[in-house]
Length: 173
Image 1 (cartoon, rainbow, N blue to C red):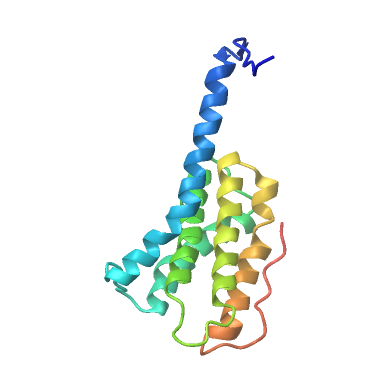
Image 2 (tube, rainbow, N blue to C red):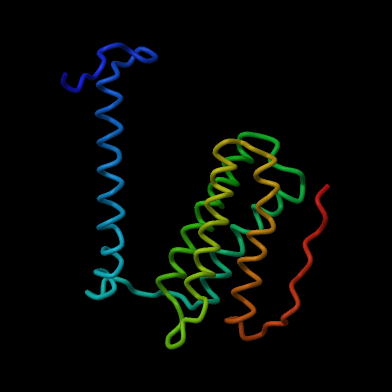
């Protein structure tokens, strides 16, 4: 007996097509995981990456506006319209991708927890993005703690004018 792939349909799509698509997607994802990280290292090694602003500029121009927008909606109980959800989604992408940028622009010398802190920012942004895409208010309301924790943990170690006491978030409505 040989391997048999059913020609029956699932939701109007032949099972062979579903199987082929699934395998193709897995191969593409594996290739991206294997080779994707090399592009950043290659860009840095060849001089294709150029820092334009300071770390403060990155924070003020990217992290603060994205975080403020997300947390504004969180503290107001969640987005109320499709436009609000789209705004949160855009801010979530900016926040997560800024974490990736910060991972590439770590401080010289002792890296300490820099990579872990940058990954925490990526994870918080990704959770926010997932909640916004699904328009899941409950999941969105849960992102304030990971966002605040990623900021506080990094600032404790790397921000020069840091007071070690975290800023308390306002209570949820």
